[in-house]
Amino acid sequence: MDGTLLAILSGRDRPGVTAAVFESLRHTRCEVLDIQQIVVRGRLVLACLLALGASDVGDARALIHAEAARLGMEVETVPGASIARKDPERRRIHVTVMARRLPPGAVAELARRMAARGWNIDRIRRIASYPVTAVVFEASGEDMADLRHELSEAAPSLGVDVAVQHAGLDRRGQRLVVMDVDSTLIQDEVIDLLAERAGRLSEVSAITERAMRGEIDFAESLRQRVALLAGFPEDDVARTAERIRLTPGARTLCRTLRRLGFRVCLVSGGFTEVIAPLAAQLEVDGLRANELEVVDGRLTGAVRGAIVDRQGKRTALEEFAREFDIPMSRTIAIGDGANDLDMLDAAGLGIAFNAKPVVQAAADTALNAPYLDSVLFLLGITREEIEEADAEPPA
Image (cartoon, rainbow, N blue to C red):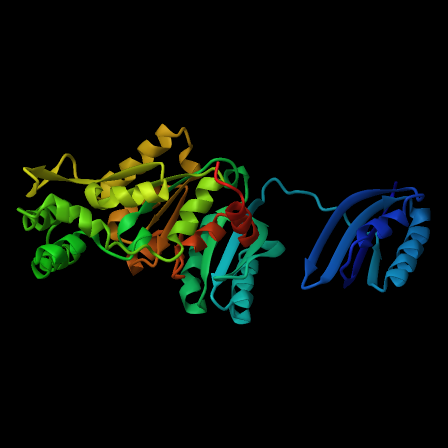
């Protein structure tokens, strides 16, 4: 076969269109090289590339046009269309774009920047319409790191969140998600909840401010803050856990990841005694946090064991990955503060969730939507898959 014919049909979608088009070609001497079909708001677009003898192009073209007329569809046929060949030097990526309201100017600017860096957009598809609009640009090009940096830098001014990821097999199969707790999984800071109940919030907040200014490191600030809780009843620690407010979408995120076969772990500079009941509710696979020392039913004002700080969070991520035999390339870390930076850097995908500017600048992608389950869209999970997972009974 020395000829090709590209046919593109569009019109109202209904059952049987694809079958009818290809049935009209059943008795021709042609071979199907490629098919793509999409339905947008009840409108179908069907494209097929056929290989056939040069002398048969006219007959095939006439058959397709006749069938399109019978179906009431528009059709365009292009003889001699080239067959796409994969360039091994060009990498395939997914660029996920999210916003509560997706402005056309943002789509235009992102597409322009991709084109300027030599990236070709091969396909665009919507994966969610609520609680945010999320679309994926499937593209091919060469320098992903530079593109990721440029699009992430442009995203805030465009009013969107953008994630650039490899489109390979690492997006499928078992993966590990490790989340920070304070101001990520939950809306609160655990140490502040304890301090407020103990009547020491102003003193604890003053130490926190000193740590944020860089006057003392996290470990020392934690020891000083916990020391202010000496004598606090252990029973009140448990009651403090009841005041925790989950971030919107947190339950959906954890539930969906579990049902899709992901491992989910929590890591926190807060305290196991407060977080463990929540971790049990969410049925996560692992928890790493600090432990308060208790003697005779009261806090001593000391922390037991090694403190989970910036390095401790990264170590926890790496240990969870080894425990579940998951490559680091298939790990996702989510956090908001400077203490999460090493963890975000070590993960295959680091997501800054409603984070400080320095964290957003350092992470692979920043997510500023108020819904934690929007993380699912960054992982290529569609709204339909989320709803299907919810409809299935848990394993």
